[in-house]
Structure formats: C-alpha cells, structure tokens
Amino acid sequence: MGSHPHRMPTPTTPAGREALDALLRTPERSVVALDFDGTLAEIVPDPDQARAHPGAVPALSALAPRVGSVAVITGRPAGVAVRYGGFAGVPGLERLTVLGHYGAERWDAISGTVHAPAPHPGVAAVRAELPGFLDAIGAWQGTWIEEKGRAVAVHTRRAADPQAAFEALREPLAELAQRHGLIVEPGRAVLELRPPGMDKGVALAEYLAETGAGAVLYAGDDLGDLAAFSAVEKLRQNGLPGLLVCSGSAEVAELAERADLVLDGPPAVVTFLADLAAALS
Image 1 (cartoon, one colour):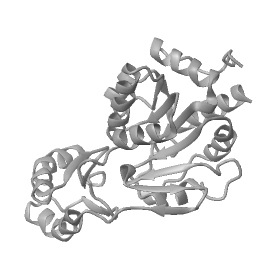
Image 2: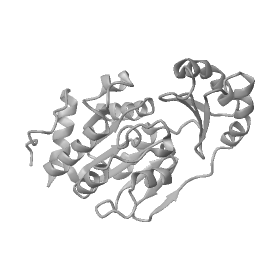
Image 3: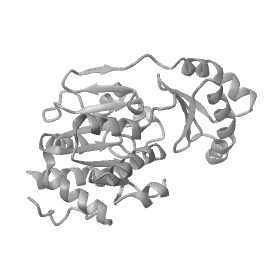
Image 4: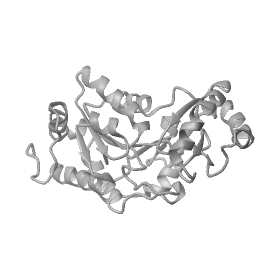
C-alpha cells in the first residue's frame, strides 16, 4: 500500500511528497478537502449550469470510505453545491460534509440538512443598493448581480472588456462593502461582497481541528482558495502533513506556484482522486 501506483502524479515538492506518503500510510486520519467550481466542476459562463464532472461522484464515493473524511469547501450556498454536485444519498458518501458560503453554512450527508447562522445585515443593505449604485457609476452594462444569500456578487464576464470592468469596479465596490461592514473578495471576472471572517482558510482549519486530522489534501483553482492554501502552509509549519493541489494553472498563477501538484483541471483532479482510492483499496 505504501507504493504509489505508477500513473499517480508525484508532487513536485518535498512537503507534498511527504504529505502524500502520510495520506497513503494513515488514510483513516486524513482529510481530503476540495473546492467545487473549477476543481470538481468545469468553469462555465453561467454559474447555474455548473455540474460536477461525471467522474467526481464515483471517485469520491470510492475514496471517502477509505479516508478519515471528505469535505467540499465552496463559496456557493451549501445546498446549491450539493444539488450541482449530485452528492445527496450516494452510497459511500454517507459522511461527506459540504461547507458552503466559505464555511458559514454546513451540510452533512448523514443528516441531509443544512445548518447556518443568521445572515449578516450588511448583505441585505448592499443587495438593495447595488442596482442603483452600478447605474450611478455607469457600470451596469454587461455586469450582472448574482444573489448568493449570505453574499452578493457582481460579475463582469459578459462586459465588452471584462477585465477593464473588473478593475473599474474594485475600488467603488470596496467602499460600498466597507460602509456596510463587508469585504470584497475578487475572483475570476467576479467581485463578491461578503462578511469578513468567512474564508476557506478559516473553514478548513476549523474542520481539520474538529476531525483531529493527521494529514490533509486540499485542491482548489481560484483566488478564493489562496486562504485555504495559507491555512495548510501554516499547519505544515506545525507538523501537519499537507498536500496542496492546483486544478489548472492558466487562470491563477499564484495558486499554481504555491501548489505541490498542478493538475490539468477537473478531469485530472477526478482521475487523481480515483487513483488515490485505488491505491488505498
């Protein structure tokens, strides 16, 4: 069991190789944590059309019974990720946890229910102001507002020049967010306004503490995943083996540079998870 199957990619860093060995050696104490969009699901122009890669659920249901736990950590509402992922009622995924809204919401397969605290009042205030705000600064053309319940996002992907629209909106939206006690989280052609203290790093660190993890694998693809990468890097300094996987290297160079293993998007991530399950069987 200690040997890697020949087709499993080898991490490029000593820390990554050490973490993969720890994961293969003590799988029952290991946590596999994964972002959803861009990692388990391909990025699509309309976020409502995103679905998990067809191989994701089979790979996860093969892997989950062989490791301590599997968690999906996403900026989406937990219930939406469960629906788009097809994670409910799957044999093998009885202990899956989905941490939605960067950890503010939690869905456990075992109960099939979402638990969440009350939303931040600033989100409702920003939601009410945004249409007029975008209109007043002349930024409404080609931008659109996505309702996320505990957060609200402004997308620029459909603007004539998505990057220029994104840059033009950064400062005004930061001021609007600050006025209501929120922060702005930039992503790929999207700026999300949400409460502070909610990020994937906090969510992941709390989950690892709760599960008493002896090793962790975290895979992500976007700026929002940098916080989780930082959390794992900090835990590694304290002796917890951690493997950082970047799904796709084109969009976010910083993530790819900090990763122990760069895989070519969701199909390669799914293959890696399936290979990991096979190595542990």
